Image (cartoon, rainbow over the protein chains, first blue to last red):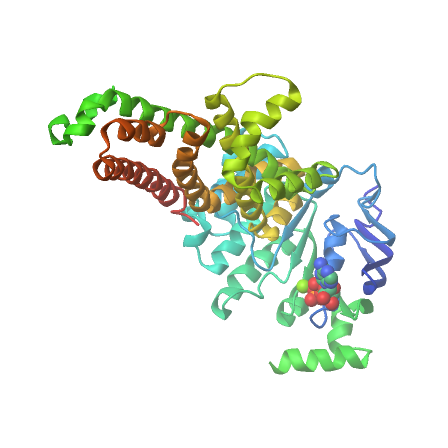
Length: 247
Length: 226
Ligand SMILES: Nc1ncnc2c1ncn2[C@@H]1O[C@H](COP(=O)(O)OP(=O)(O)O)[C@@H](O)[C@H]1O
Ligand SMILES: [Mg+2]
């Protein structure tokens, strides 16, 4: 079982009305692998990773997570999702709850962990992301970088076997980007399987095993990161990279 | 009980002489408003949530109810509750009960719209984040969306409560002796419209201001952190 790849997308197609958003996307992520997804805005990156935890329905193809078909009617989506952590561009912390309660919520209500245990686990995780002293703060009183670290702790609280990141640093002021990337790098070192949509090419170079480049709903490159950064095969990826790096 | 709160000596002669009668009217006004607020809030929440959730069959029915009530004058709603519905369903009712039912049905339609738009105003990303952590749709609604929406809808909801409080005076038309109806009866005997109606208006003003103050305090309390 543990020999099978953790995430397998096979010719996934999705359209909104008549507009195709994903066209025949196939992607395999092995256990412990770090895959960075990049590409121009609107190319379908967010849609692709939301297919992995069933937040986006798709019209054809198949998505398997740990051997289970995500789109199957019989799949227990809440259970499946509790095994996959997800971090969003705009943090999406619950504004009416403290950082601690944000991290506790799904442990108590989805995993049915006893409150005391959930609380202890949350405090541990907040310490791990460097926010031990901010447990009682509300999201509105935290900086963007702190909010995103709370969001990472919230995702980790379910003891996921994979993490999905959708542009986790794009909404951050430059001086806060590194505090979030550092936490992510730590996770990668600990062997977490990660799919990361990001334009942080420094992070991709240092941490990713593979880089996937998307354009107009297609996966146009999927190669080991050294090879990708060495010489992208497609013109689109070359142009994209030169723009990102110049800026 | 209400008598104890009033500095009787300060009241105009005509009010003082008819005080028990007027206070009974005021008690009826408060009672009608309370029934309308409690019943209307429960029904409005139910209808608003049904509209928000886009339940097949139920949501269109809820929308129809809201449209019909909002397109009907309050007085007509009260007449319907007093004459038409009892005739149709074959039961007898008192003016007070008919008015109470009418206020509940009337205000619930407006509250339902406030509930629905409050729920819709919660950023969908929050619900998505909840779902992504393995919470069920119902848990996401109960733990994340509803608490967010409630604090947003307190101001419009309290302004509906204030409207309803003033609207209770319409019940006098079907013969309910609430504050306005009682005052009109007193005036018919005493004929001192200026003093009597000024007193009535002032009473509504004080109670409505108190109600909206409660709303503002509640809002301030709940939204410290949003
Ligand atoms: N709810 C939606 N309705 C219609 N089109 C959508 C919707 N969500 C996304 N799209 C379209 O799908 C395409 C891919 O979007 P997205 O996956 O967010 O791209 P990316 O994350 O790469 O910027 C875009 O062209 C976008 O306009
Ligand atoms: Mg995106």
